[in-house]
Structures are given as C-alpha cells and as structure tokens.
Length: 326
Ligand SMILES: CC(C)(COP(=O)(O)OP(=O)(O)OC[C@H]1O[C@@H](n2cnc3c(N)ncnc32)[C@H](O)[C@@H]1OP(=O)(O)O)[C@@H](O)C(=O)NCCC(=O)NCCS
Image (cartoon, rainbow, N blue to C red; front, side, top):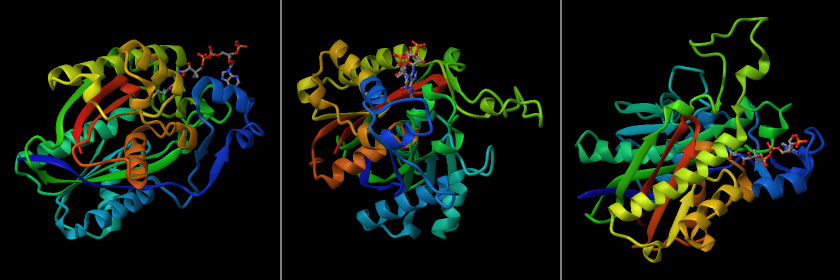
C-alpha cells in the first residue's frame, strides 16, 4: 500500500492586480517585472479572505472533488508562513473549526515555499504509520499582509491563494512514491521577517515597520534556488531510476521564470517539462505547487500513471521535492 493525492482543490482571491496597476503605487514597470521574473499579475486577498478562509475553501473543493465526506478526515496539515495568528493557534485549527469537524488532529507546517512538499510527505507518513486514513494537506498564503509595499525589490513578487490535496491510500507504486526534504539553516537570514519573533521582539515605537515584513537578499536566494532546483530533480530521478524522458511534468515552486529557466538549462531538461503559472499568480509560497497542480487538473493535463516531480525552495532556507505517480 502507498498514499496518493485523491483530488486537488484551490481558492484564488477575485481581486487581480496587474503589473500596470501595481506600477501606479510601486516604483516599477510591467517591462521590468516581466523581464526579471515572468510575473504579469497577482491575486490579492480582501480583509475577509484570511489565510484560514482561503485554506478552508480550497479544502472544501478538494473534498468535493474526491467525493470524501468531511467527517472522514482524520488530520489537517496547513503549510503557511502567513497564519491568521502570529504564533498560535495554528491556522489548521481554524480550518478544522471552519469545516465543523471534531475529534481530529490539525497542525501547521512552517517550511516557507517548500511547505506543501513537506506537508505531502508528512501526510503520507501519518497514513502509512496507521495514525490517519484521510489527510487534507493545504498550502495557503496571504503574503500581501506581510509585504513591504515600499520595497520594489519584493513588492512585485508575491500573491495570495490556497491549494489543497486530499490524501488517501492507494496501490503500491502509485501516489507519493518518494520525497526529499532538506534545509540549509545557515541561510536563515537570506529571506525572512527580521523582527517580531523572540530573537528580535517587537518593541512598540522602536521596531521599524519594515522589519515586520518580508526581507530578501534577492541575489543570494536566486543562486540558492537555481542550485537546489537542479539538485532535487537529479536526486529524485536517481533515487527512482528515472531519466528526464520518463518525467511528464516538473511542477516547481512558482517563484521566478528566470530561476526555472536557468535550472532547466543546467539540468538539461527542456523547459516544456516545467509547468509554470507565475504569470497569473506570482509567488504564493506554500500555495504555489498545489495551485499549479489544481490548474493542471482543471485543464485535464493530469492523466493516470503520469510521472510528476514537484520542487520546493525558499525561506529557511528549505528545499525539497516529491515524486508523484498520478
Ligand atoms: C529579485 C530579483 C528579480 C532581482 O533581480 P536582479 O537582476 O538581481 O536585480 P537587482 O536586485 O540586482 O536590481 C537591479 C536593479 O533593478 C532595480 N529594481 C529592483 N526591483 C525593481 C523593480 N521591481 N522595478 C524596477 N527596478 C527594480 C534595482 O533597484 C537595481 O537598480 P540599480 O541598478 O539602479 O541599483 C532577483 O534577485 C531574483 O529573482 N531573486 C530571487 C527572488 C525569488 O524568487 N525569491 C523567492 C524565492 S522563494
């Protein structure tokens, strides 16, 4: 027996902000954003569209599509770095409340843009270990709430949304066949929120507002991202006796077109194998891989037996990937 994705759902805020619209308030241009990132639009959540709201809506759609009753769910895992409440309660707790199901476990995973990749493997482990039969894994982010809108180096990159997968048991050789989960904690300061945690507590009147928003050393993150994209794809292929010809799709974290193009050239894997949708949704951190899978599902691109690699990379610095047989 193994564990696989029975269905995948998503939630995307209706408000769509184009590069042109953003250029009215941020010192940038459509030309710069497109040429440096491949991003054309992002969807921005309203005040009512909290992280837990978007996560719940994505979960409902996934449960509906799988034909799984909500009362069959044993565990909810939410991957997010933009929880409704800063440290606790977990956003997964609020999703459990919103769904109105009791007697189950719920926990958040904080692995930044690798969060959903981690979540899938953790969910798989819970089912294989016998703790759960049905797990909902959600990647949900409201990055607009932690974006420094005065920093053009980061303000143009991010968007909001959520994607969710229902995990259930499946036949051996199908589903989530393998995962690699990695971290380089020495890079903790390349991409983070500098203040507000216990290392640098928030002091009213003293803590600069921008230190409570995303900070990024773009070049350092870029170099890391290209390197680990190649590493994860190669390791997953080697561990599973695959060549790039065997792979139907690589679904990377949707950070930046240039990162993926550089990784594709280094790994000698054609760009056509990479599924990209950052043009529409920008970088949605934990939500980006499930949002891409959900879009592929809607377009009926995912066929039974297809071999798919996911790749996550981001703050932490975390990275990893899953080998899925659909
Ligand atoms: C952010 C990133 C696109 C910046 O690209 P870059 O080529 O490194 O650009 P630089 O930061 O060197 O800036 C080059 C110039 O563009 C300017 N610039 C930066 N952001 C800009 C923007 N949004 N609009 C217009 N100009 C901008 C800079 O001020 C700089 O101007 P200067 O030369 O006059 O000083 C790139 O570093 C990157 O992709 N990093 C990884 C980001 C990422 O994906 N993070 C998430 C991973 S999970």
